[in-house]
Image: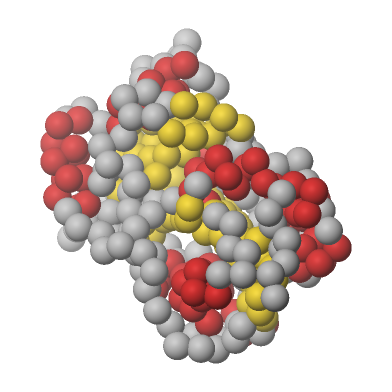
Length: 304
């Protein structure tokens, strides 16, 4: 039966991979590190973050490509582990396409969550219906899937779904997203563009920021630098494929997980020069520290 909206609920089926294979990201990132020369990495000693709502709401911002199992498991644990109630919101309209819905759901089903649901609205009006709102209101974690960030915001911005996503964070849950689902998390959203960004409005889950994804794989440094130069109140985060920036909103801590790099682009201001912080797996910093004119101490050298 074809309906204007569909909601799917599935549990514990075999896991599959639905995104393309990441290739060459580490080599490109390493080359960029050499090219930057003066760029410095602002970190503290890496420590495994505690998992649970006592840390406050958490964002898991994934750059795209194939999402590594460790990132999915981190999201799952942040959502409550075996007691998690996860809602998946694709970045495209799913409708009655069972094959497409399975592609979004199957990577999560082998993790053993208590409840996994997919919701997909055709319009903002339908996004306000009780069935959709109830699903997100009961969620401990919301995953924003890949697709089209312009479609995501056109469908859900200003709706009760957007409000409930923010409430998930308010009550200590987790909101994750990949590709388009990552781009929508900042207040200023990069909607597209090659040499320069086409700008729009996102959900504003990470304040005072702008996020770019597929960053090193698609050579988007100039696009992000141009955006933060035009908006010097924002920090730009470029997240590469196979990689995630985790943000604990309660204490503003940032940490990097995955296979490649996150670049933080901090624009010039009265008390600091423009700079780029290159953050790799295990690196940590905070949002306030990124805005400091000088950096925190780097990670100690091995053997010290």
